[in-house]
Length: 452
Image 1 (tube, rainbow, N blue to C red):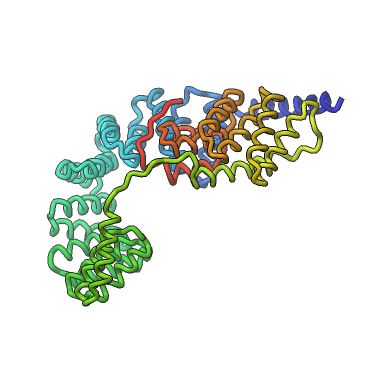
Image 2: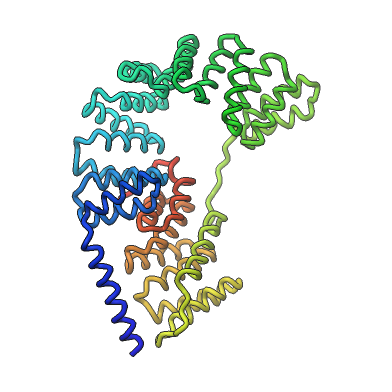
């Protein structure tokens, strides 16, 4: 009787929820997404755009705006999947190509980014931002002279844009045209006096033009504005070294290394300065470190790692706190084995915990949650392949189980599987916001490709 009453109440709630949703159109949710995005409520915007897409899956603007939201959450892979769809639906949208190109640049897919910027310029040939972004991409690809051409074109379209002026100056620095770089940095600072990149750039140009004192003045100002930028201390240290101020240079290199402990260039130059200060032993120690840090060593991945463990514990804590508050046992007693398995695992008795989870699966073979929890337990025991199998079963039974995508993504990442970031993106899209922290830290520096 209790089960029947519970089912009836659940049905009423579902019907009520459905009626509420039906009263709002895809356009309503789209506008809600825009509003939340403008107020930087990106998780809320993501949910609103997703609902809008469910109600109207043929609206390119919804995919485009959800892509921008995902980019704000540092989910570049997920954003590009949405931009792919936006371009399929509206091939003439230059902005969709622009932002996909920006994302691809961040992911080091420079060839793909270049193709996107080329297409965007074909569609909108008078947009300075497009030439600026293509110039940045060309600069990173090593095509410095071509990049300069793009920056020149961008400046003809937007002659007072500080970003473009700074970018052209950076390009001129690479071409050893230090006088032109000085002029462009100066123009940029007229428009944006506290632009650290331009101040530091001008300082380095002055250094190259044998004006070390003027360079020190610029780097002092840049450091006032960006006290935690290790590269600023490193470059100021180089200038002090050129001036023969070895003790003062060591102070800057100390600060560089405190901010970036593996800055091997700072170790090397600090060692050089110490040698000039008649501290040969410490000089050799620093130079040894610069050699060791500059080399690469192959490391093999293990099934068990701190990265996996940290995220597994967070998931397990979430399961206990948010899901398992049951006080009444069902007839099949699967929950009893499930909860006892969780408790045994927490107490360190992992073998008995796994036995309980296996029994829970036997008793409730169509319950997605049981497979998911067993996947967490298996992962905590180092059985990552078994955990992935359980995640697959979970997702097959419940395609909207966000945490299962997250766990599978974490494990895949640690195993070097290029599908990992797609899983993490899907987890975020389904509402597990913790996923975006991992995406931001792990996914955006690699060229992950996936489909779903």
